[in-house]
Figure 1 (cartoon, helix red, strand yellow):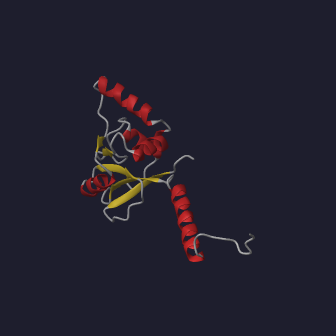
Figure 2 (tube, helix red, strand yellow):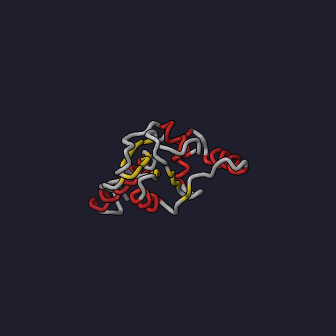
Figure 3 (cartoon, rainbow, N blue to C red):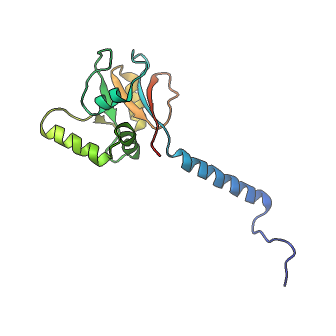
Length: 156
């Protein structure tokens, strides 16, 4: 028995919706490797930061912003995928290497790592309330209380 029409289990509008959903899913998968945004309080005099300055703050090598004001870096939880992406993009090191670095520094009593907060909303909220705070987010903030001082491009 020959069919003269191609048989499709779904009518064309449903196939169109399915194709659009697939295209959207693929676009989101591509966006999963996105930029990371280093943020400070909007009132912080720091307008932009070099990557080395941010490395120095998050790796405990410096405790001040370039103009001399005290800096208080905040991190995400140890098991956060965004944290792993951040340190890879910032330092070029894996999270295991960064954790090992901090273990050595803490063992010698030299310094403590940035305080980890429960999630990105907690980081944004704390930075918005504290002019000395610095943190990072996986999405560009729209909050007027935050200023982006560095955008980290993720290596592909």
